[in-house]
Amino acid sequence: MAIGVVFIFVLLLSVGGMFVLYHAIQRETRDLPRMSREEAERKARDEAYRNDGP
Image 1: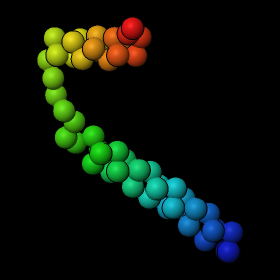
Image 2 (image 1 turned 45 degrees about the vertical axis):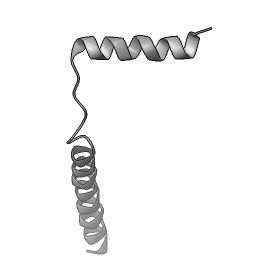
Image 3 (image 1 turned 60 degrees about the vertical axis):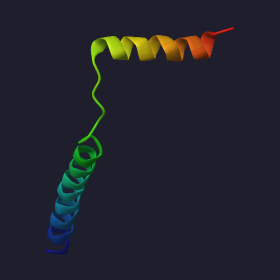
Image 4 (image 1 turned 180 degrees about the horizontal axis):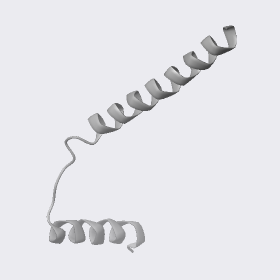
């Protein structure tokens, strides 16, 4: 009986943790900045130049 209760508790804890993690990721990625392909390429070139520049 006690083993069954522990098993159910661990099962509910793991499933609940999965939903909490999913919700946290969804909230964090909700309002990501959007940019066009040209802007993204320009930003990537600028950052690469700053890292490898003179």
